[in-house]
Image 1 (spheres, rainbow, N blue to C red):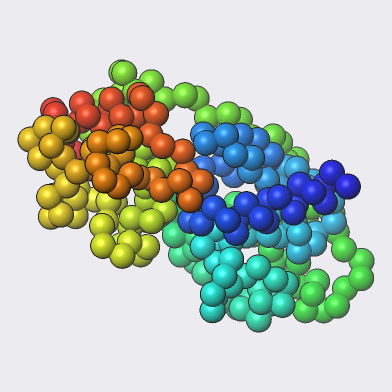
Image 2 (image 1 turned 180 degrees about the horizontal axis):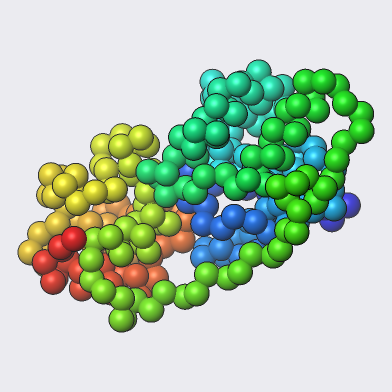
Length: 244
């Protein structure tokens, strides 16, 4: 009962939160915004099923493909697109790296491939996740060390890795953005998002509560607002010249 509820909550979370950046690779644990993520480790003793596929291999896909023409929220829809899905996964063009996503691990790929192959051949005997060669010896993920923003070198690359990727790039890359692209400094400067000081820069004002008419990241995305340390780092980076 608990496992069924967990899977339902995971799928519902993918549908409701919209596009957000997935940091972790395996296991059930807390992300930086406090929301649980489900991965291969949690399903090691379960048979390869569609529920496992959507909770592990396709968890990031469903953040942006839960509805619409390219929806992947049912087994039938995934099977109908299996060739294009497998092609994109194997080429590592999906999930998009430009949005901050990591490619599927060997285990995640094999879960997806095994399920599709089982469905295509109508197999009754289904393997458990831990019995797949690529998933042998699954271990719980190690927690990412907390970033020391006070001593982190001021650079755009560090800003992008530590703040923009998890908080902004799911919706602000050349692939996903409607207007504003934040994945490189040229686009940011072209949009004049940075002025001489952070207090006058839209890039800073829009992420500080109450400082601008709009606020990012939007609450509906489920992405946590910038922390005090993240805001301080962004402010110091801009005030120091906003360099690479």
